[in-house]
Image (cartoon, rainbow, N blue to C red; front, side, top):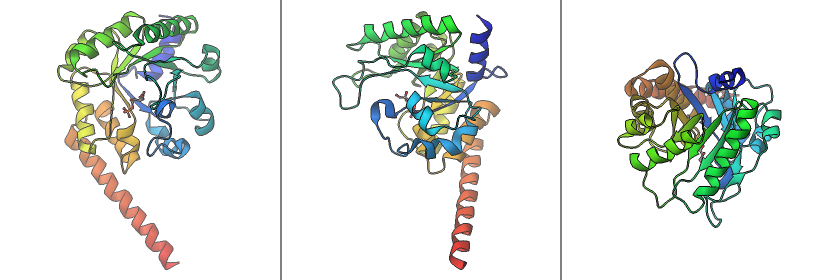
Length: 276
Ligand code: R5P
């Protein structure tokens, strides 16, 4: 592997422990203004320094992230469909490699839809992106998107992850599931998990813990962080599990403690405002 490729990958998967906390804020590319991500700048700002990397589109990067930021960028370059359109799997590559280089992207991200109507097209997209990325030393994160009609089981996810790796993806993002260790075992590149729909904070921390225990290299988590009532405390708790080997209880206690403190500070400042 070339130096540039290794260097960029080391910004995504930390070399010390081979783990990662990627913050996903790319949901708008097909969902529009997702709840609590309506104003991306406001959502991203307080979390930026706690993420190992940030996954987003070029539009949100340009408009909503300060260019002085040191947080590595995972640029979502696939799109072309919407939640109300004909078929979510009908994606193409929407951002050029030159644009990714201009934006100083450390990694390129693209969805594949194995088993869907547009399987061939999305796998061709991945292959093309890997070819381009290899030319310039930029790794590719393949996102195994799951259609409504597909089961999120280890057989399906294992198939999708392995195909992504065979086509040259450097990292694969998928979902946690029963027998997840089989998915990881069958995939020769690092596997990270999406958080999925918002869960209770403790359950999201349990999901993180279980995925790591089963061999995941980390998380690419969105809604379970920024839809939490205390997003900063939540990303810190996720980090504690990923990077400091906290148990779920320890991480949740830390989350709850920080939440209580934040609430106390809010109350104090509200009281101050009233007394002035
Ligand atoms: C989904 O299309 C996006 O790629 C998200 O980045 C991914 O699902 C992770 O976000 P969440 O943790 O909210 O599922």
